[in-house]
Image (cartoon, rainbow, N blue to C red; front, side, top):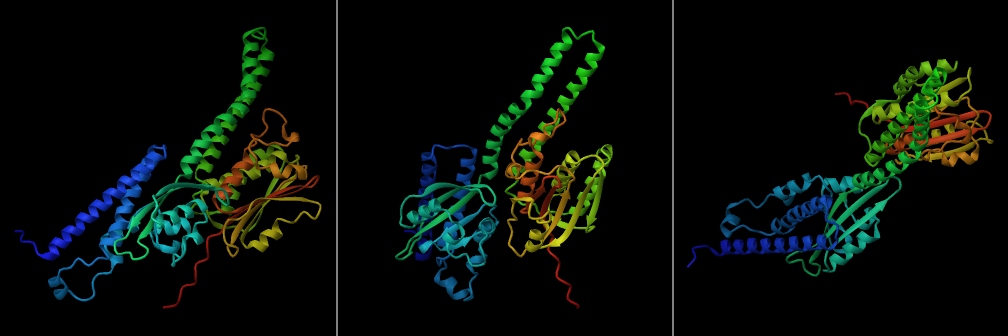
Amino acid sequence: MSNETPPELEGRRLRRRDTIALTLISIAVLLILGLTAAMNIWVSLSAIAAISAMSLIYFLVVSTTASARTPHQADSEPATAEPADRSPAHDILESLPFPVMLVGPGGRIERANPSAHEFLGLGAESGLLSASLRQPKVLEAVSSVLRGEPGRLVEYSTFAPIESHVRVHVIPLKIVDGGAFPWRALLVLADETASKRAERMRGDFLANASHELRTPLASLAGFIETLKGHAREDIEARDRFLTIMQDQTERMRRLINDLLSLSRIEMDEHVPPSGEADLAAMAQDTIDSLTPQAHAKAIAVDFEGDASANVIGERDQLFEIAQNLIENAIKYSASGTRIICDIHADIGREDIERLTNTLGPRAGRLTIANPALPPGRRYAMLRVRDAGKGIERRHLPRLSERFYRIDGQKSGPKEGTGLGLAIVKHIVSRHRGGFYVESLPGEGSIFSVCIPAVPAKPPAVPG
């Protein structure tokens, strides 16, 4: 006969029950993934993550809530046992880098790790899943699982205010002694935005690059053929052709650099920056770097406004914004004119409306990107006013499209790539800021960018 006491036998029975249940659920998860016919590295990683999270949640909900103490332990231990929130399983759940949630009857979130709170913007009280995740396919899958139906793999995409692609594993869990509502839904979310964008960008890059590079490559091939033929001994023609070939090569270099820059920015657009930078310093550095280009056209670039404007952003990308806007202003302004670059360090939504409406009622205006942050947030604004011909209203909606150039701007081999404003738009979107254009034919254009300002620190309380 066994020497084990009844409590020990009960403990063994519970452990055996837990092991069998977890094994069956894991097999169910693998079957679900197999039926999707989308087995790749991302699905495999998501499956591992789902099974790991499921195991942790299961032990957390079942094992930690069941009393496993013997009568002797119950008499000898203090009445105040360690709370479940301080269990090792709960600590592991809290440290998982991917969003995990447990949804109970009525669609109420019973548990959510910090990653889920950050990903979905959950408050201190998790509340109903439908209030935080407005995705009908996911909510339908959760409702089915809570009725005891098999789990599902659901994908959804959002495109406003920021593009995102998410894969959701909805896994059924049956709670022992759950009463009238024994089923729970375990949600494991995998953000696949980066991989989806990378896949799309590869195709876009090939299509755009092949289209835009065709003209300069054809030009180079024609000049090379001419130089190898009847112009071989014509020194004057050779020098002229080589100059044109150099211009075409430089154009291809700028185009490839801009395409690569745009691809990198779009890849990280869904991840807001966390660093700090001085937008005014970026503008001043840009003016200094473009001074030779401005002097070549006898253009004066004046800096006005606040000398410092601390914002939440990535320094290199903010420099790229200033460079594109100021370089465009120099390129399309007439010789001997004046460009104004001004900084406003601490403004709200009302100030943005005022500062982007300064050319009068006859001017055309367009909001290319709106701030994606709460209305009470403060911003810093960079405005660049050129002295060009201005832009007609019909062109404004297409300014930030890739490779879009107004007919009058297609002036020769040194024309722009048509990617500068698209780059600015995506950088601004990543920074959760705003991008505006205001233009009046004959008077010039004003391009304005606002970036979230660093929140002011509360005053120190005297000791």
